[in-house]
Length: 165
Image 1 (cartoon, rainbow, N blue to C red):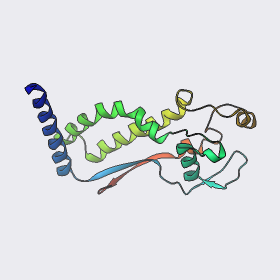
Image 2 (image 1 turned 90 degrees about the vertical axis):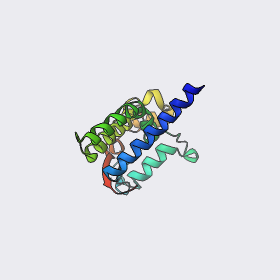
Image 3 (image 1 turned 60 degrees about the vertical axis):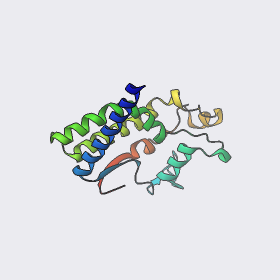
Image 4 (image 1 turned 90 degrees about the horizontal axis):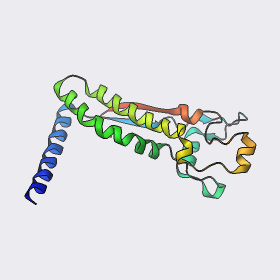
């Protein structure tokens, strides 16, 4: 039992040390996903009744009244990226502390991992998303969701910001 509590204390100290190191290094954060959601989304016919943000929200959360199930790429992308982030974060903190890389470079690496996870959600759609309704697949001429114009996929991006989120 004593060994278990020592491990908890050690983890707690590591957390405090990491937080203190990050405080000394300065504030910064990343934003990853659809950052320019007000841009128009052109459908396959070239019409623009929705924005990229509208389309992203519809697919991330679904639109039950329109018969559209959720096809998450933001949340799912973070889940895909999580194991790599867990391995990468402690190494990046050490590199920043030693001065091997800047905080901005560390944040860029984290953002790229998250962005890759979101893109992977699109690539592995059959593992994660429900299939299109047959009527939708017939209209589109294929069964792959969210790729008609590739605008949503190509709108995924990140930015690094100074300050607090």
